[in-house]
Amino acid sequence: MTATAPITQDVLTLPRKPSEGLVNLIGLSRSALVQTLKEHGLAEKKAKMRSNQIWQWIYQKGVRSFDQMTNLSKDYRAELASQFVLAVPEVVTKKVSTDGTRKYLMRIAGGHEVETVYIPEVDRGTLCISSQVGCTLTCSFCHTGTQRLVRNLTAAEIIGQVMVARDDLGEWPAAERTRNSETRLLSNIVLMGMGEPLYNFDNVRDAMKIAMDPEGICLSRRRITLSTSGVVPEIAKTAEQIGCLLAVSFHATTDDVRDTLVPINRKWNIETLLAELRAYPKLSNSERITFEYVMIKGVNDSDADARRLIQLIRGIPAKINLIPFNEWPGSPYERSDWKRIEAFSEIIFKAGYASPIRRPRGEDIMAACGQLKSASEKIRKSRVKPDKPASADAQPSR
Image (cartoon, rainbow, N blue to C red; front, top):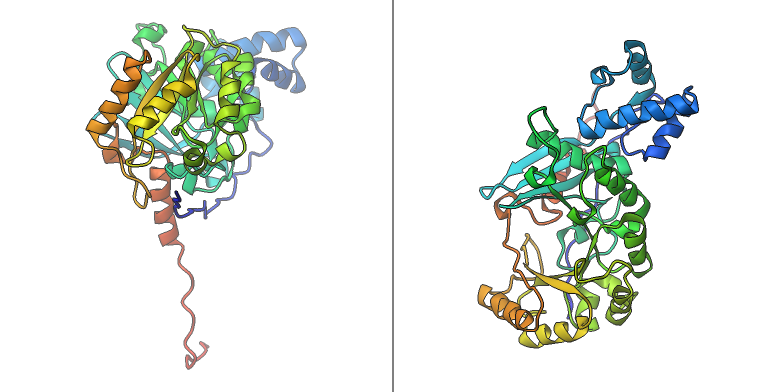
């Protein structure tokens, strides 16, 4: 089985704006924030106190100006503004679906763009965030796989997506609003956007530590899910250093098919991946691994595939999310018929596993991962036109 898709490069790199030596405080860990303040003249004890105040202003109240930090002296606020910045990604495009889904195209340093999607549901609001510009894995069903990897996002750019979404949702706590996650519009984070999170582990870890901090955004670790295509050497670290829930982009029940859909399988095959998942430090009935399985017509959606999947994951506390393929222009696949998806789900359910079918969201706003960025790239390409060559008999101008 072969499937290819055109590669879209990030063709236009805008020059980075000069920072004039100013340090971005967003994205720094607590210890790094203390150290940075010490390096800029504060003694240890005062640096710890000021870092706590600044931390709460940034992540609990969502301020972007030192002038708003009113429990700091006016002189110290001016000093902070002369040495530091509070920089987050810039929203370039925002699209809102008829089903309430919001998709943001955000610009980061260097002029690159990444996607973030907010998905509202009855009992939660989930933000799907990106960890890289482009992706190195070239999964054949994924639109981001058609875009070459440009670079990893910084911790500031990762947590910045959460902060920008909260801006748009009006989510920062006001006097009359509690910080209880049960009442939040943005209650869950999934690292399922552009890129492979485990290939940017340190920055992802630092950003999620900020998201979970009780004196800041304050999300429970069980409300954060990291999705990996199967970077086996980094999987255990997810439990040990982040502690969030784990999802695996599985998508196939044989190595031949998974080699095509998820090419990282050629490095760490199904057997190797499942052995690592069985040894996952936080694995339990209360913290199941989610197996993501995109339903592709005639490729991985047969009854035999469903039965093989059951046998493969036997003994692993798990649930299987069935995802109707979100078709994109030029994609080499088609979505499985709905009756086929339901039959597949029924086989898994009867074997004792939860097998919810993810309802397609945001199809009217190009919500498939990578679509909005590719559309933006096409517009940018159309604006960069080569100079028209002079004809052979053209006269030189005077």
